[in-house]
View 1 (tube, rainbow, N blue to C red):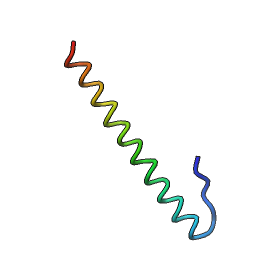
View 2: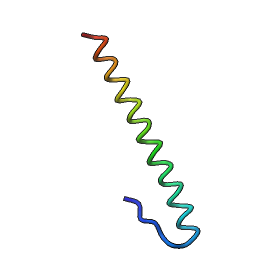
View 3: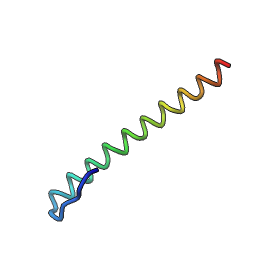
View 4: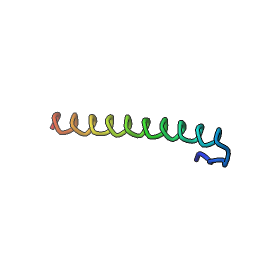
Amino acid sequence: MVRSTHTSDGKKIYAVARGIISEDKIIDNILAIDRYYHKLETR
C-alpha cells in the first residue's frame, strides 16, 4: 500500500504511483476478460 505524505513532492509521487497501480489493474482486467472469452470460445 502506498503511503501519502504531506509534502507537495510526496503528493506527486503518490499520484504517479496510483496511476501506475490503476494501469496495472486495467491491464489485469483486460487479460482476465480475454481469458474468459477464450474459455467461452473453446467450449
